[in-house]
Image (cartoon, rainbow, N blue to C red):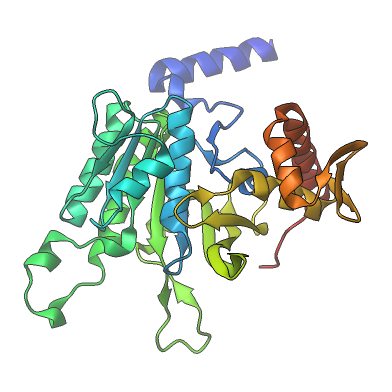
Length: 332
């Protein structure tokens, strides 16, 4: 009798409020393009039907990570809308990272460059409502300028509450549709120093509504340079998962970013596996279980690039190790 009553209740809720009020048990995701970051999120990347915020200092690699996510979406057959609020996106670089031409009928990558904050959020909303995009990206909150602010000549009359107010309205209007249409929303944000604060630190533009609405918050910062000889060819990007509604927060590590090319996925997983002890070293020899991978890092990368089966095993063991031992966590 109890089972029948429970089933009747569910059917009544669905008939009155729609099928989408009953959540799916598993969250689907889009890869970030960094295997180590995917593993640390516990769901394999950024969540579908949720908002993800990527923020950090200038030069931290925020746009490249957003484009890397777009690439993974396009390669999986999904359509991507990229709202370039800064109006300064390097189109050739974006097309290279994503692996698709923008704004072409036969392509899956759309770039829009609106003039005001209102236009940017309206375009973002249209993309969510259309059900044509699995991923929509706004880059970035810090560059948004409301129409009122653009029309106002007097700088002293600038209203700092306009952007938070717009995002509060945006979240109220589209939060349910993001989930119902299963759209992954990525918001790229910046950091601002807390001027006059006794404790220092930073804040992010956009207000509290965006912060609370995000299911995943990833903070990026530039770590050490990567060199080939004397030439700097890239840098390690440090990530900290500041908020994660689908897994553990405050996991942190790095991934290698190569200038002009993007995230080095293979080197990322090898370095990560080595830190976890999944890949071991015997002198210069890299080993996975009883399998010899190569003498030195370069030979190991070449071997794994031609051995997808071994690479998949390494990734799975890394996932099991991280989520069993709860490694790479920070204190709040």
